[in-house]
Image (cartoon, rainbow, N blue to C red):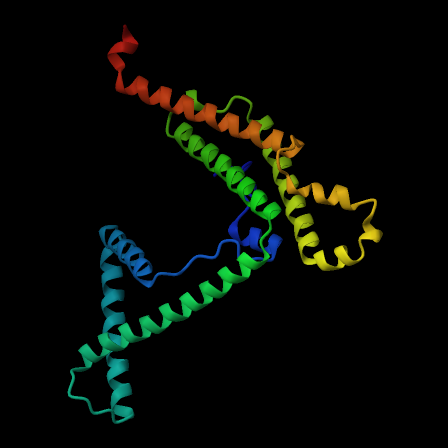
Length: 247
């Protein structure tokens, strides 16, 4: 990612800090984690450090087996099952416990989020997703340009970055304001006379169909990303039809 794009994306961690809600609550599936680890391990084995990875992996397995076998002997556990099979069964059992705990945590966070999320926040989360998608599209386009395709470069890049920077500031301000309103809703309702002059302005954070400056900048950046996508398709068509291009 180029330097001018660094720090523009609103990360999941930053978003949860701004909202004080588990807005990116995802259930951890152990089998998916193991599959990803397996693919990563295979990729490393096929790489230049394959021998080292195999040695470390085998050493880890042997060490785990010996440690488990010593544990059984220390506690005088006498079972007519080989230690290797018992280790596999214990790993499955531990995995099941971890998966159950993960599910309970995910369920608890999901209920908490459902109870506290507002329409305003949902709208803002959708805008954040669109905003991050624009940055991702520009980053991909930058990579294609760096690969030797200067014709797909963004012409008015400084203007685009400025629009994205202002959009991020607007989104962060909106998220902070929404959190203040949400966490102090009861007080505001019971003391509405104190907010008589400001309540209408604060409520505008819902960002429904109003054409705000934030929406204009975000749509502008999104349109530029669509233009980039069009140029990428045009470049691909030129490569696939070199004869038509020469004619």
